[in-house]
Image (tube, rainbow, N blue to C red; front, top):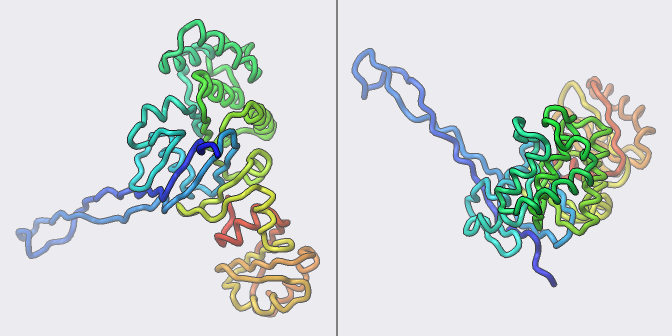
Length: 339
């Protein structure tokens, strides 16, 4: 078996909260009328907690989770921008902590927000980046023109970056990440802020890259994006790995039937037993003011659920139906929505 393109073992990252100082009231240790100073601990943040991953050569791998789940921290460690607290992470045969230069030679990074040099033209952005990696000028010019043509922005070659649309700037960022021909490409929520048309166009770009055999790691909190593009998906939340499999296999693990979620004006717990007793309901649970019911015919259950809520003295403020999907699996694992 070939070695993984990326591997992490018991990867952990804890962000130490800075010690803040504030004025306190008079104390026995301060002269009369003098306010004493003292540290105020604010608590550490565990961004990753014993994360084990292995990404195969040529795989399109997705990290799926809500904001704050640990996705960007994972990418940060694998691209050497963030130091792990403990554990191991490797890209190819290079350790991110012991050989960061070796890792950077092997990777291309597409940031969450485009960050080109706006004082340069489109092609100058690529040539400058290529020079940073030691690519000879002649080879860099050939690669730049080929990439700009491949990503349908060849006609913008000599324009300033500000003349590009948001989607075109993101394609420029992908071209920049590829100019030195890396083994692995990291994309951190690459379609955030794009309109639907630009998002679909970027999907096609990513599919072409994958078809070329490149290893791609992408973070996203868009269910459909992960489902459409990725060979495998890791679902993470609060720094922990909750599930890892192909999109179809993960959807097969979702609770049966449609999820009907009622948001009430009070605690939903008193309705669980009655909801569970309704014909056609496979599972019911309460999460604060949310009553979640899984049923084969979700829409048909709404009148009975409304009646149950009224009988319990609760008013329904919102109703949300979700067919079996990655979203219903995520909700069943975490008790909350992805976005």
